[in-house]
Length: 350
Image 1 (cartoon, rainbow, N blue to C red):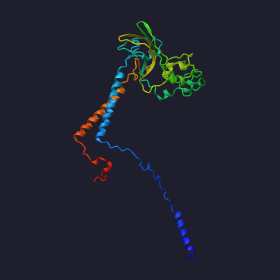
Image 2 (cartoon, rainbow, N blue to C red):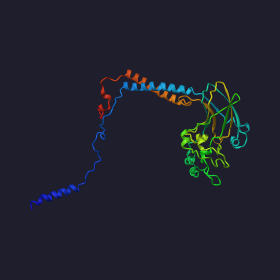
Image 3 (cartoon, rainbow, N blue to C red):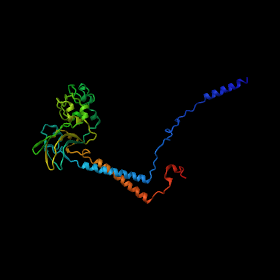
């Protein structure tokens, strides 16, 4: 009898232990990583370090800003806004009717070269208040159709410029291609034609990868309402560089797109005669049109923002460095006083 008693007691204890709920702990397994005990750099930002850091940034940024600003100022630009002056007086109060009519839209402009412009001189057209980044506009294209001749019927994303009235697919389809810029520019200097090279104005990656060499325009601009430029149906899309440049949509409502290159120097005070066709309708949305002739520098086109940004940041850091220096000299911190360290302060505030 006595021999069975311990075993029964042990059994009851074991059953009680097994019946007791186990405590689930979410505490991670100990490691230096989870406990943030890995070796780390904990710099103490003393006044000398802070002042030196701000001064170093200013010493680096200010010269870069000055060089960038001078590089931008070396770029020579000629900008001519023409959407208003190229409208006849009789149509000044109804420009939309003028641009949609069949009247002669030839306009002559004269550009004066202010400074020496070294080749190559890039010819741009600039549009203002034109939102190429509109969601419906950006989606209205078919990349597969542009690249592959067997995908001519892939026009589901091209509405409303997807098919003609009789159901034939439009190539290239979509609003972007349909609204292709169609103003033209012809230049002359001293009564001689000034050639504009329109080869190589688009990205090589676009010509090789996004536009097919065996894809030709079909049923393009055949509707009753014409959006922009017509395309040569005998030239593949990979060689229609005006279209390729236009299809790379701009992110901002004011943008420039490359029209061509003038491959000769232009001397100061030379007069360039421009014969343009004012065909593109920007009057329906109060847009602006500008013709731009520009050189480039090692930094690119004319853009003062980069230089101004570097000078602003560098000047601000220099000002902060001087301010901290004055504060440090007027009210220096006592040597050997570790009370400014957060881990040496009494959290209770006593």
